[in-house]
Amino acid sequence: MSDRVYIFDTTLRDGEQSPGVSLNFHEKLEIGLQLARLGVDVIEAGFPIVSRGDFEGVKMIAEKVKGPIIAGLARATRGDIDAAWGAIKVAENPRIHTFLATSDIHLKYKLQKSREQVLQQAEDAVRYAKQFVSDVEFSAEDASRTDFDYLCQVVERVIDAGATVVNLPDTVGYALPEEYGDFIRRIMERVPNMHKAILSVHCHNDLGLAVANSLAAIKNGARQVEGTINGIGERAGNASLEELIMALYTRRSMYEKDLGIEYKEIYRTSRLVSSVTGMAIQPNKAIVGKNAFAHESGIHQDGVLKERTTYEIMSPELVGLPKTNLVLGKHSGRHAFNERLKELGFNLNDEELNRAFTRFKDLADKKKEVTDHDIEALVKDEIWVIPERFKLQYLHFTGGSTVVPTATVGLMGGKGLVEEAACGDGPVEAACNAIDRITGLPGTLVDYKLNAVTGGKDAQGEVVLKVAVGNLTVLGRGLSTDIIEASVKAYVNAINKAAYEITKPDPDQVGGVVEANGNDDNGKNPG
Image: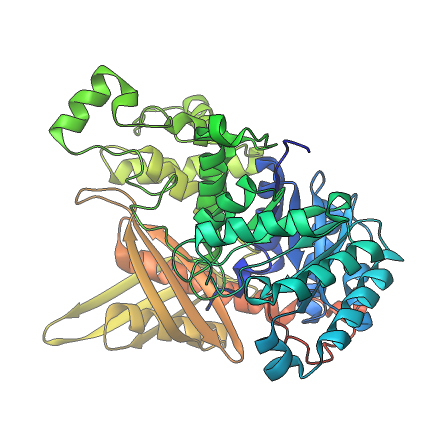
């Protein structure tokens, strides 16, 4: 049996199904390219049948991301499989991932089909997908609550039909580690042709056990593990890949499994996903949280200074965190700035570097010290953007306890510099109202989050907000030492995204996709 464990990343599919998350093409590609740099084995790029946008997003990942297997999700129907193949066929290494529920509760209430009907449908779907690709994955949705003898029949039949990977998800996060590990062991022992396929697991975190269940499965024979960066996903999310990866690395003497991961890309991947989804990472999050390698207790600090392993079981450098928090200032040059960017994992082209360095100098004039976290936030704010239809040129506002808040905003756009003034309940609302007048794209603020990038009175404020523009809900980010300016930048960023989505070419003109059909799973996930 191989000692290799394959990492299957579903951030772009199951992760995007997190409530309130919607990624545009540019953001999906940024994540896909970074996942390739991280070294994941499989990228599940999306669910092509769901929408034209999802189809085109999967197709773009398949075209541009090299190295990993690119998978497209499909229900166990020919229409879904056709759409998945249409999206992934340009990939270096394409995989069709088809799924069907197998538990009695799903058969009775959702599918309204008999066990024999589902068994036949699963086999037919795999055989049909096998006509297009050699690599076919089948997922038995809600496998952990499926009758064991019946599940063994399903697994045996789909392997005979050509499945190269069989995934047995804990779809509702109900299993316990000992139980799930035993479940995987029994499958490995009972299914006579299991050696012909890779056994995969996809665990949800409803009881906070997704990583523990995944590790128990690996210990008992699973050779592919599915999850997302930062553990994002439906409900309480998926198994957190960075936690799984580092558990297998840190306790490799117990698991004795090889991975193809570039460990130093973990931190950057985590921050990118957090940035583009707007889902903040909790400070005490394992591996990638702000406090993961922080020591406040005097006893802990003394121990770490004498010998790091007294209180650290892994080094921050291994996952891509810098060893020291180098401080740069207004007298620092472009070369030092660029070297620091490379240490942080950013490789910018000349144009991006020039823009970022200009922003850095502006920030250095406002702050005494510019830390790594400042630089990281600044660069993300600068390079991970869509084309700007509107650019903030200036902002003036007045307000107070006895004064009606008023803002004047100047935006540069297709008509040159346009200025408007407006009132509101506060300076942020006033500025947003002025922006609405200029752009003609009135937005409604759905959610607003403000985070301090670093400590101190001169900390940069990072604003992440969600804005509804018509039927669209878009995410905006803004960064500044002035929280009003950061808020306005975030709003302009969101409006730019809305403008981009409204005016981008119709996918029908560049290769469309059939509409979603059937009701096997209502377009939702298999795990």
